[in-house]
Image (cartoon, rainbow, N blue to C red):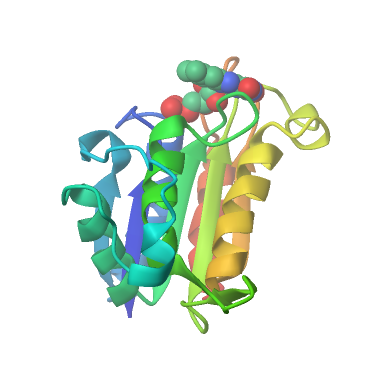
Length: 189
Ligand SMILES: Cc1cc2nc3c(=O)[nH]c(=O)nc-3n(C[C@H](O)[C@H](O)[C@H](O)COP(=O)(O)O)c2cc1C
């Protein structure tokens, strides 16, 4: 079982990184083949919106890390994406990455009906924000991250089996209880 873990936070020792580490540890204990990457290490130019990739199935921009990550997503069985909440959504770098690889995530019929390209694969989401529980959910803060990532993954064919959210990170970092939830999430695949 190949597991790809993407950290959408620029903080490599932050809350999301710790939550993802718990998922990774559980996966490694189960003998899965785990690859981890951090969007802050990637060089990905923003999408120009030309739409050429939809018919050509490749991007017209000079090759960068977007294509490399798409290759890893294509090769994985389970995708784990973690992101902090920035303005009720995922950070820009992570969104830019998903924009650039749209053609490898979701195809389209001649009339524009989406065709998911990763059917049968599973996904786990983790998100963190400073807004405390239950307002992180009610006001769409970490919930906004989960909603936005689910939108991408749903249309790409992934089944999201678990979404773990940590609110209130200003007052205290991610809790042990939440780390246990992250480990449990991996057991759902
Ligand atoms: C640019 C920026 C925007 C943010 N926007 C929000 C927000 O809209 N709502 C919120 O609750 N927290 C917001 N935060 C706080 C982060 O979500 C929070 O600190 C999170 O725990 C960071 O996770 P990390 O340690 O993994 O990077 C923002 C932080 C930054 C840097």
